[in-house]
Image (cartoon, rainbow, N blue to C red):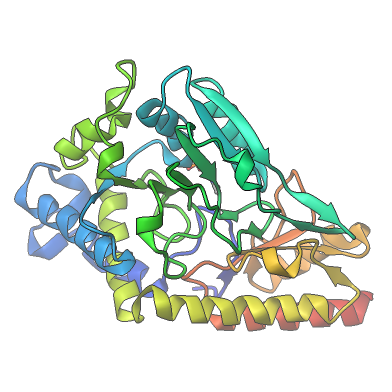
Length: 361
Ligand code: PMP
């Protein structure tokens, strides 16, 4: 098999050891003669897998007992709608910090269901983007919730502070940062994430919701998005994405074996530092995010001469460094370096970047 490093933003690379295990179990799970994806979600085998995955997630993220963990469908965008439907009325205000394209998308969706109000936006100063903290006076204590995206996948912008919202529940879209490091879950009302970056295959989204926010859904909320209904049915009111859930469970076991999210945090920091150092040490490459707000999961960078973008992408692809094209809305390059990306992938990318600069700089 070709040896490659896959820098896709999502669906993204999964740990090779997990893929090998899934391959081995694919047609004959636990000597049952069936694939796990061929059995009922109501059977003892799948229920055991589902419950174990939830427990492992709880252990990894140290989820307090007064939080429900839901395994839903509809991806990250599904939650853009589910959150307002579950915890706000039509006349309520939701507060939004915008730090990039996904949190902006969340505002547009919330505005269909409540009074969505932007209280902070990315600022560019001396060519560097950063996220300013809102003034306490901007946080209306009557608001239903405050939504933000701790790590913007497209823009490579991360929060280095937690909004101080008083009693207003914090809602965080952690799609591209969940389990990349420790998080104090008790500070949040809701954490949600599409699975296809740090958790497993697409088709699954994880929602961690504080119990007092469960049971408030509007009557018009689609049943499969109703947190209370889903919690009361162990996320199996409808047929769940069983294979994605099973694979997420394997990823959680792998994460535990790696030392958990604290160990991932130091590895991820080292990977990101190595890549940003290579970008910063050269005038051939640049990253436009203020060092305080740089993402350790998604590293966008531009070539000084965009006319070389196409060649960079062709040559990197040929060198086995896949999916480095930046999002179409920002151009340039982006290396997504989630938990599964080993340091060897970063080293290979950095040495390719140096070589490319030597030939074309
Ligand atoms: N939020 C973030 C931070 C994302 O990165 C993405 C997808 N890349 C989404 C939301 C949307 O997720 P989905 O495509 O699963 O709806």
